Image (cartoon, rainbow, N blue to C red; front, side, top):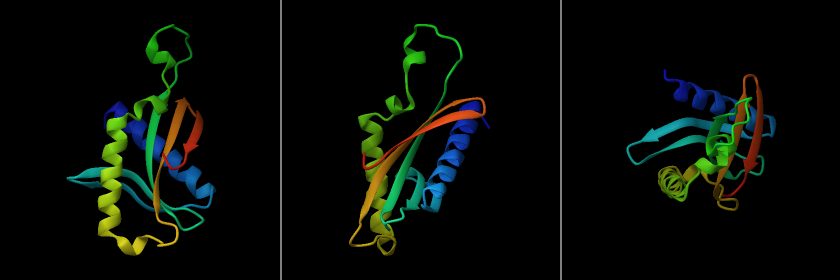
Amino acid sequence: MTQKLELGNYGETLACEYLIGKGYKILERNYRKPWGELDIVARAPDKTLIFVEVKTMTVSNHNDDNDYDNMKPEDQMSRQKILKTQKAAQLYAGHYPEKIDEKRGWRIDLIALTTNGKNYEIKHYENI
C-alpha cells in the first residue's frame, strides 16, 4: 500500500471513530462503483443519510514559508471533487431509496483531518 493510501485509510478510520462517537451509524466505507466513490456512508442521529468525504493531510513540524505547508485538507475539496461526490451520492440515493428517511433526506459532509504522528485534529463541515 502506498503512503498516500495508508494516510487516507488512517484518516477514514479516524473519521469513522469520530462519527460513531457523535452517534452516527456507519453503513458503508469505501463504496466504489464505475461512476464514483464515496468514502463513508452513514446515518446521522436524526436519521439523515450522510455521504462523507474525508480529506487527510500530514502537517510537518518545520515552518518553511512554502504554499504546501500553509495548505489545509479542506483545500483539497475542489469544485470538481464536490461535483463528483454529488453525482456519486445522487446515484447511490437513487439505487438505495429505502436508506433515505423521506423527512430527513440526505446531505454531503466533509471531514478534514490534519495529523502529526499520533496527534490529529478533525474539522467536520456539514452539508457542503
